[in-house]
Image (cartoon, rainbow, N blue to C red; front, side, top):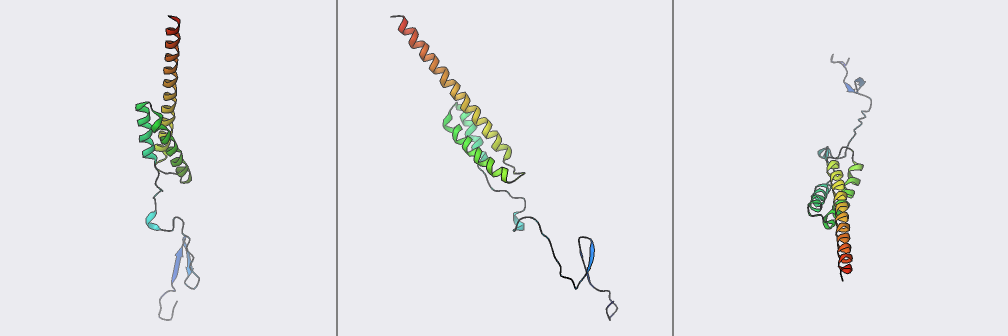
Length: 126
């Protein structure tokens, strides 16, 4: 007790009382700026999803290929930050983009076969 009758000052860190004479050590985890807690870096996952869906609707690789590229870059960012909210969008954009590219290739192949059979049929009629 101090001379005036008050108890000595103690600091409580992690549940243990420590005398005030010891240096206080605080361990802080997380980001350096407390205002950024819970924020993630921005990605282009939404734009990639829109491009992939537009490519799927129009059977065009012109928008699906950029959608797949943007989705891949967004997935790289989301893999570095677990729990990133855009991870699902980026996965969906990549899957829809590849489906769109596959359908485009299938339709182009089908049209080429139709043209080849039409040319072969017309050549046989002469």
